[in-house]
Length: 345
Image (cartoon, rainbow, N blue to C red; front, side, top):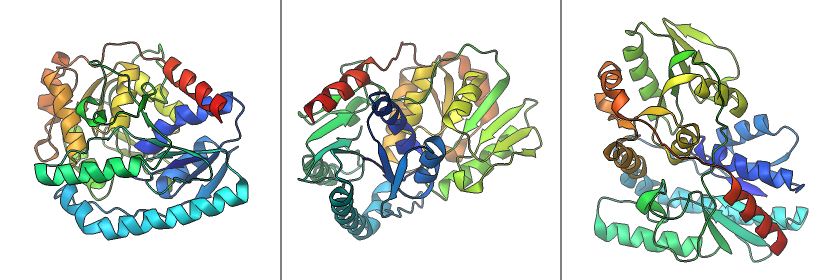
């Protein structure tokens, strides 16, 4: 059973390589989530069984992740308790041999082997005293699971930086991307790929459309809204697509020169796999995204702009100084991890 957090689409997309490899190993895989993440996974894997988990219902104002999470902590803890009870029911009913949980803290059990998937062991918070407390509780939750998997490579060349440090009992399972590097001709100058919590996702879409309509370039905008269904619309020079399956998005990204997106970790992994240039615009107040955007900006890998200071014309003038990730990324570590994991069950 693969349990996926519904916060943007990144948690769902980075679980796809795991699901794919489990299917290659002839494992009977069930998927559990809620909301847009579950809709996307149902679209990608119509042949697999799916189950509902309670929503965390995280609302994000954009004033600051810490404040938003603090006010919603009772609601989040309630959802964790509910999902733990529902998981116990599912394990009794369907006799799962193992559970892999992407950032769903209640999906652990003593009745079966459980794995916690995360790149955020060290949660970044502006206040050091609070950061210490939050990290302590985060690690305590993670240690309830039998294993902790980090979607990254170990060492100085990793993508997650300080985020994945601070816990001894972890397995680095390689960079998880649903993308495959394709050799296709360039068809699009700019591809915008949106995701993340509302209302900030919608705000950024409107802000980008204002800038992009002034360009004499064809732009593709993937809104990351599975619930809108299918149906493209034209807004001046911008073709807006509600969402794309992984295979089609892979083709669009491969055929695009520049990607504009949030700086979520799953997006970073996709960009690294494809070796693409990108303009990263972190969700305001999300410390993880701000850290990653600044980290790769300092390394001259990806260009970074703040949401309230987006200037695409200016970005295009300097984008060639930011070359993207220059490394070969494959699935060999993940294949080895899954094989060992299954042998131990």
